[in-house]
Length: 232
Image (cartoon, rainbow, N blue to C red):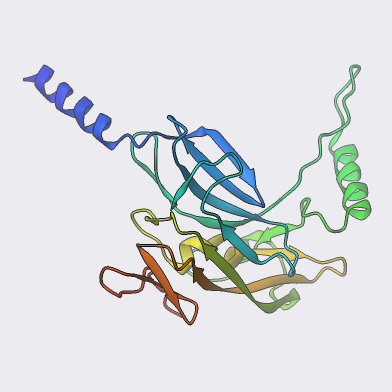
């Protein structure tokens, strides 16, 4: 009985295995892709946004630069772990100077990052702070002054290629934009910029699974919206 149960579980795991692996990934034009073990298809996993307002157009191409077809935005990896396509802040953490004689003190580390951020103001290096909890309430445990927050609307345009035929088991505007909703960017004057993001979709006319109308993504099979829209 026990052996039969173990065999059934093993068989279930095998059927859940998708062939995508985090160990086989590439980043092209700011989008991170997981590659299947047989290198025959790719999954768009995330867009690494540098927080510049002139880089809000995300293109999921027909194929990667090596010809691998991009067939899904999000999906399942390993033995069936769900991965949602998402937009994330691209945070650069430079390597600390190495010293053979001793470790850097906390004060020296802080001074290094302070100097680095002053010299590289366009890079998000330690500039992010959590401002919203998953339920939408202010994350006051982060210790910031709510009066320091200011908000700005921004729209991300996602262009979907003709080979994309899946968006994973569940996708919503919030699952894509969660990090942008939750994190604020500390400005040089101490204020905190929080973006209020929205999505606008375009789809290649040759795509047989999806189409877009007025920026909304639909499934051709039933004409229903693909994304679950988070409540205001």
